[in-house]
Image (cartoon, rainbow, N blue to C red; front, side):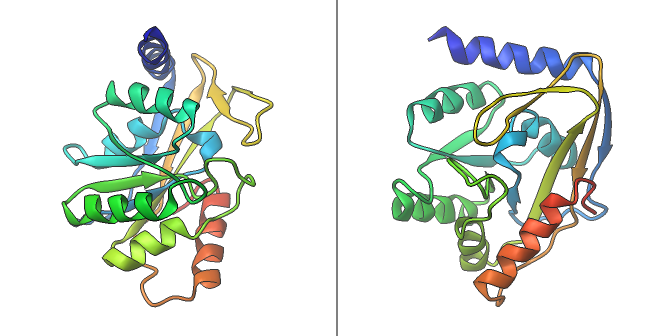
Amino acid sequence: MLLPFIGAMMIRLIYLTTRKKFHPPVSVPQEPCVIGFWHGDLLMQPFVYRNWRKKGKIAVMISDHFDGELLTKTMRYFGLETVRGSTRKGAARALLQAIKKVREGYDLGLTPDGPKGPRFSVSEGIIAIAQKTDSPIILQNCVPQKYWQLGSWDRFVIPKPFCRIDFYCSEAFKVTGMQMEEAKQLIHDKLMNKSII
């Protein structure tokens, strides 16, 4: 299948032609982290991660839908493993696989509002995984100066070549012991602040 290869090459081309400013965490935990980012900002996330975790192992939670299969094959070109499933389809299996990956030493990336939204909502998955593994959470944002935006539910963002992109990461924080709604609100508020610190 050529689509994943072409997609990976286009993502790399966009990245290589942009001006980049990284705002990494001041302190990076040695232990595995749960990494969250909005579904609409997914395109450049592998580059954000590799900036602050040079040699880390990471698995990304991808839905079982057809577009998830394309995304899984595309992510392999960036050295990312995947966990298939979501909070809607195959939820229990996906959560168990995700927790297993974290306990094996992998960082875990996921979109709190994926795979089908609503946009900017926070599902319980990211909190359940972080709490079950007592792992810190790091949130990532990509803010391009110029971009195309699709008409999809997540308003998917594609940075334009030759623009500037700011890549932001939050400091690591834990939600262990927090009530679900309190933790969801915390993650939502941090991700909505584009320059999360």
